[in-house]
Image 1: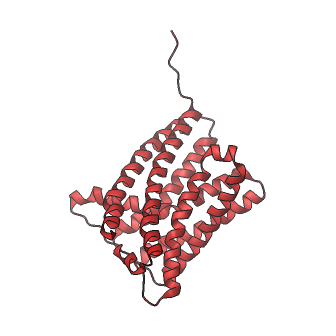
Image 2 (image 1 turned 60 degrees about the horizontal axis):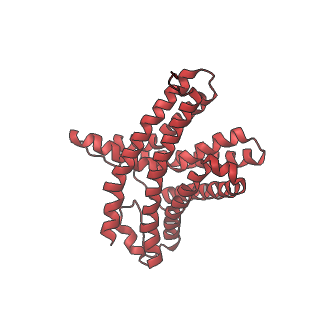
Image 3 (image 1 turned 45 degrees about the vertical axis):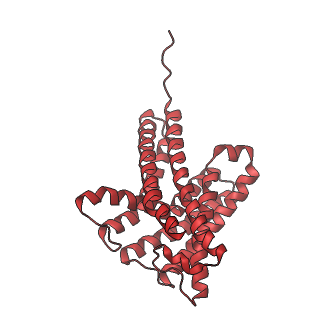
Length: 270
């Protein structure tokens, strides 16, 4: 009688990472669809004032041509960089179409740099600010995107692919901070609503979620990279279990964002 097959530590870690990647991709693509339908639809239709049907800190402002261009471009670049970034993590693309991987990587890193800088412009020059805590979080996130996107580009040019992978993964997570923020707000809102706690943009909960939207993914990534390098089985199994649980949390947060944040805005815009 054959003994049951035991999943090796390395296999378990890959399965955990794959589970989270699938969950994240579903949530990110839902976000991309929203950006395309809402921002792309109104821009192509020439109805820029309708962009304010969705709450913004500073949305479309009549007469502010440069600010409006930055605002719209930042939103659309967010959709492009989110979609492009996911493909960079698919091993089959890297193996079978390395040329596509390189050019898509250039697109991802280039737009990530521009989007980060435009986000800093919108915050500190246009004045799209929610409060000191949020401003600080957005600024650190944007500066880290610039830093790690630059490091990923330089390490690729030097053919230091181990460092390139680590830096590119950090850039990918940081770029998706805006998506992590939305699913984090949804999860926090659902958890705190029964307690009668509302999320205020300048309150501790929102500021905490804002920082967690990029700090927590970076911390999980560092633990994953350590587990990957470890020669002991326990860190790999523990990280695989953690990623499996995080995939469920990610799916729940994404589903809540679709149901309570994005679909109502699209329905109201019809």
